[in-house]
Image (cartoon, rainbow, N blue to C red; front, side, top):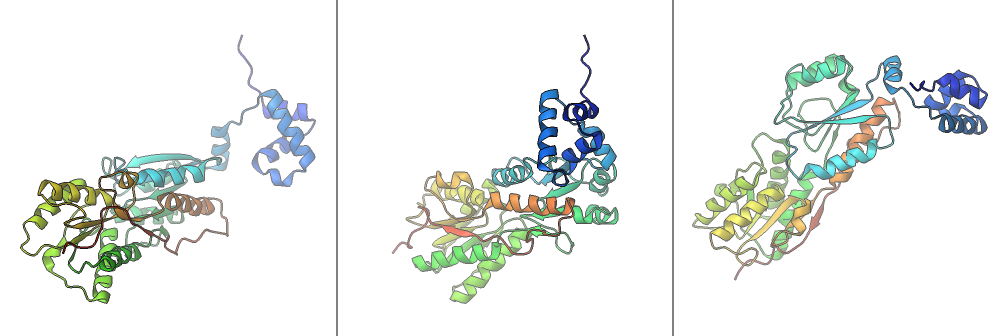
Length: 341
């Protein structure tokens, strides 16, 4: 026997109201009295009625989906951010779609096509290397107010950005090493051209200058946020005739690779050289030695970005603050100590 699906009219008969009232309870319950709303909800439960979301979305010309653009899903840094995004969208009608822009780069028309084809209502971008033409076409398609950047961003673009106070984090790292007695401090950067690389390097240089610390060109070592770049930086430090006594790394993964490379070369951390990271990913607390680092509230980053996008999708005038950077915090563990005498 084929079961006949329950319709909105069936719910209306059980609740003794009109089909229009049932529709209002489902779409805008605040305009219906408490008594009527309760009656309709009980009727929905007793009849087993299920909302045909595809039909409703078609009527409203909405996809009820948002796209999250992540530059490398394999990096543990993004887990906390994605958890914050997921929590913010939990309980809403929106489905969260995730794509890896490293394995599947966004072309010049791809993102705009997602909007124009009705596949998504909005996008959250964690990739600061997105194609600028793709973003401009998005804006031209009328979707510019439905793209929100977080963590990284594309300079010169009008999209809101949810970010940590990267420069402040770098200053905290340098000041911590200075307070321990270090005066010869190296820095392993992120990839050239990356906005986080620039912000953290600028913060490092500003604090180093403020404190009057010596600077050598060879103490600025290019990395790329990876374990490998940290390991390679260790080899360069080991070859220096005038070695630094401490290193500030642009990311925790870089710091892990650096510590491994220093250990392989016979230097102990922190007895011979101190190391500070940036991010405070989960592994930082359990690495040996436990890593001193700058903590970003990754969960809050994802949550706030999602709320900004949700407010734009719902035309809410009370948009969460998208301008003030999210504070960072120095977490002192076992990878830093006074310099060797």
